[in-house]
Image 1 (spheres, rainbow, N blue to C red):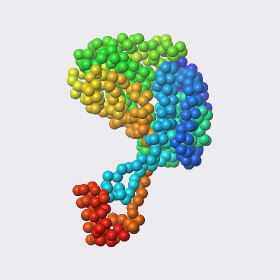
Image 2 (image 1 turned 45 degrees about the vertical axis):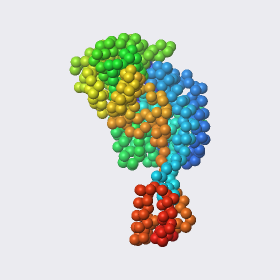
Image 3 (image 1 turned 45 degrees about the horizontal axis):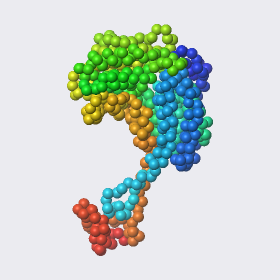
Length: 525
């Protein structure tokens, strides 16, 4: 997507570099108007029941499924991924998320009683959590999964009763407008409940990161996330941020080699490696190293690179020139420091777009950018280890902590290693796929982000858990024992209550002993 100087963005196919369409750019006043419109729409939308809000989303789901081929074709054309990946990792996930949480949200967002452990207070008080929507939520999404990632925030935000202002990445603005069509036209949302803005950074400014916006859902690079977090912090606006990753895979000595190699190749090269949870480095037990590398090379050479026209390619183009140049820089740095490319390492001849061959590097180490910085491209560096402790140390030697994987035929061993890895999600004998499990949290630690998406915990990111406490004391209790005025009698009553609670925890006995005391009646009546 490029600015043509006419206050529009031009959508470019990353496979052919041909123009796909033009999108008008919103100005600063339009971005502010979008937020103001969302704020105005919030009271009526939040007043609806969860079931009423869910009906709009289910209508949007049905509209999506009616146009599934069109949507997958657009994702492939503007983003570059094969249509199979567009269907499975983007469209199916969104349809499943809406279906499951349109029903599940009623339970997750229902008031929850807080059991009080103190028997004396339990006899007088009751507490519950009431989940209230926040207000206006901004969803700012990336170009690598331009459909499923923003829809996750939009679906949860709307189900929870918030209104949403959605800013898609400029490289995939046409997909962003299709999302808007699915929810607004297909779902029949009231005006202002979901507004999509296509805007430059200058026009957007800080509008989506400060009040009246009440929460920011951002997915993208760690650098941009830090800038947004700085703005939000000035106004105490909370954020959910899914940022970069440098995800390791550990292949143990007892691993199923065929399974591990196939999983590593898929994990590294799906979506042309442009996945925050891609396998970006592999640590292999030394006795398996040569055979594992040979299998990976064999599988990588078999991958078909090109534009998806007849469902006959595995790897599409990279999304933009900038990311392609990052991959080239990482390969160049590694080769200069002694690494070897056993396959790939170049742009494929004869293809016009942003293509790069699936590349496997060996003789790598942690002085190289490809082992320490997020590559976000079709690059698989492989390194040997001698002990599990060494593998864990190398895997944790990163500023990131999004996902990781362990490959072993011993389930107990796999789970034990998983507990030692610093990552939000660790899978055993697979990698990255849990993004598609809408019941499970998607989360990062360290510089991979804060907060959660997906899962019940992800839905609860979009509400404020208000604590409501009510008193149901007996009618004759006209005051509470901890109220003024303080006195010797009040002290004695409190002393008795504390001792009885700690020793007996028997509320009937405690209440009886208190009720027979004159000083209790004096204090409480």
